[in-house]
Image (cartoon, rainbow over all chains, first blue to last red; front, top):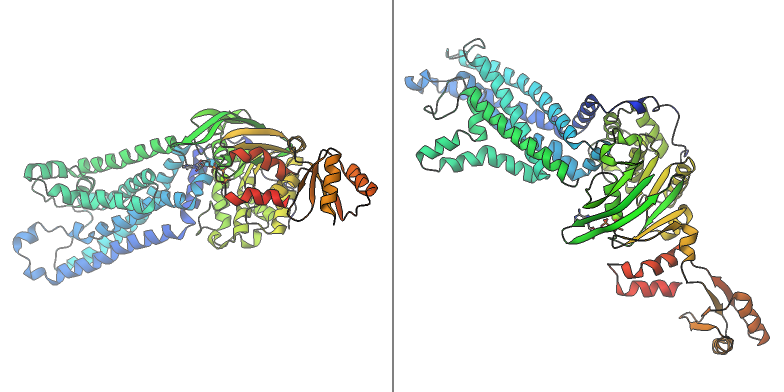
Length: 278
Length: 310
Ligand SMILES: Nc1ncnc2c1ncn2[C@@H]1O[C@H](COP(=O)(O)OP(=O)(O)OP(=O)(O)O)[C@@H](O)[C@H]1O
Ligand SMILES: [Mg+2]
């Protein structure tokens, strides 16, 4: 076969002294992220949905515009409508967030990863950063396209919004952040559960099922509790026009609450990561 | 050097490791032996900082694994052979490990060359055969050119050529002064490879010694003799103080007597011998004898079959 000398005198004496630096971990996590197909596909699906649904929904609205009552036209939110796709995109991003960690458990690479870097919290942090940056950038591009396409369609009936209109930029950035932080929540849940199907179930449960259950409570409770749920709190920042009769949190307050959910999940995840066997 | 002291670890009610202490010295290959479920893999996972012990500690060059920065430079391990993502190429698998420890990417090409995977480096690791997966695992252990290496059943699933390669490879690692701990169930292979053994059973140390010493502790040394006139020879041998056991294949197992004595007795009684040799204890027989009580998952026929084939 090959020779059996293992040192080929080249590589490592000088770098042996290099201290373990966080950028090394970021580079490592980026290599991991980009070298599997599921990352690319999740991003294509998420961002494809954002754009395609924008076209479909906006066209549908325009085609029925004349039947729309005046009262509804007044509270019409062209920005939010052109970004309807994020409701579905959040699932694809959530699945990716879960997979980023659970695929390490299912394939067994987690043990290779941790024997290369026993500082497990740093590994999780590097993962979260790489995932968040990639998600934010790609989703921002898709959301900008969806917005532009949607408004171009709405202009046909004179209902389009401009990016300079009040609240529109906030909605665009807010929607991108909503997807990103949602993905981080999924990453935290995936780390706690260590299982792809379980992680996705938890994520979908928190984002989609929980609001439905809380909604079934009698009236003051349903919205007093409901407004603090992850998706209810996080979605306020994505729309320009506020509805919900004052039962919702403010856009950035809501977003902070959403961030708190993700932070709790990630901190718990980091804590258990250190205590449990890999 | 690896220093394991008073290590204990339970999974629920299962005591996987129970007050285990041993040291692994540099410059030689140490075989890590024990029946199924005796705690070898668990011990190795604890050494590599993956599992937490309930008590005791495992030190790598005097420090616990979790305290190492860039551990790939100090210790490399092949713990389970398929610990890679099936959709990722061998090159990228090694690259991300290298990057996490600030190892230059050209080292990835070197280790791929070393284990003979260069030509399939860009292929998805999921398409690899068992032996190729094993080689990829060995490559990842070598990335940082570490002084300490742990291999959990490295020849599992390798073809004879691969087994020979691993054997020579381990020997060359040890001859360079590295510390090599390798677990295996293949006793004949271990006998050819290891300089020392650490033998455990039910999570406890049974023996830790140079391999010759370990084999020497076995009592199973006896003479095998075969003759057409088995009953006469049995009587003569017994009269002269030997203990004799007839074996299924018609040969006799003689203890308390050496080959020359048996041969001379036969000659003086004009008995024809077809076979006469000393059965020396092997690593396998010594291992069998010393771990017998500690085999947890014992099949009824297995031990009898093994003794008969001796
Ligand atoms: N993650 C785990 N959860 C529960 N029990 C475990 C776990 N890992 C190991 N064990 C138990 O610990 C004991 C030791 O197992 P271990 O895998 O260390 O043995 P081993 O010596 O490597 O065995 P083998 O020769 O079969 O590989 C076994 O009883 C096993 O069932
Ligand atoms: Mg094992």
